[in-house]
Amino acid sequence: MPSRAIEEPDYRVVRELAGIEVRQYGAYTVAEVVVEGSAADAGNQAFRILAGYIFGKNKGEMRFAMTAPVTQAAVPKKLEMTAPVTPTAVASGFLVQFVLPRDVTVASAPEPLDARVHIREVPPSLVAVIRYSGFWSGSNYNEHLAKLKEGLRSADLPWTGEPVYSRYDAPFTPWFMRRNEIWLHLSGRP
Image 1 (cartoon, rainbow, N blue to C red):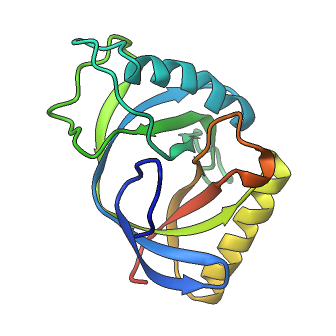
Image 2: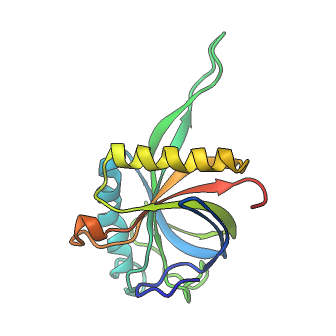
Image 3: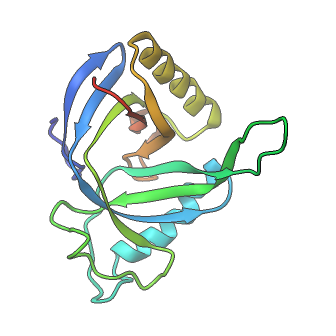
């Protein structure tokens, strides 16, 4: 695991492809919220809610250090099936998560005062990751997601679920220094 200034969940790199890391993550605890709106706006909407929780808007008024990453993934909404069309999914919102410090568990985390915030343990997982810099834009995200999917197809590594957009830096970080990642959960062995 690389050395990092801001705490991140523990992981180890189990395989490297061209520009892609396959990481084995251990379990970690998150505060999460589902928000409606566009992908570009979801992070800002959720940030205020989740920042409230980690900065003391909880029973016990406990404050937490900021950790990384802040993750965001679409929450698919299943549509009714109508003949002869097969069921499809559209985004009904976005799940945004703040990773909590390592010493915080679901059992030890204070209860949120905002009912929209949920505390959950993310189980150990195998994740394929592509890293890039820059501000959020749909074109930058889509370009890197396409590269990640193509690399996984070439390596015959199937994935499952929605892509996860992960941000690691404060909003004032210059665009060329920002660390962004897209994660895809793998459904098999690396």
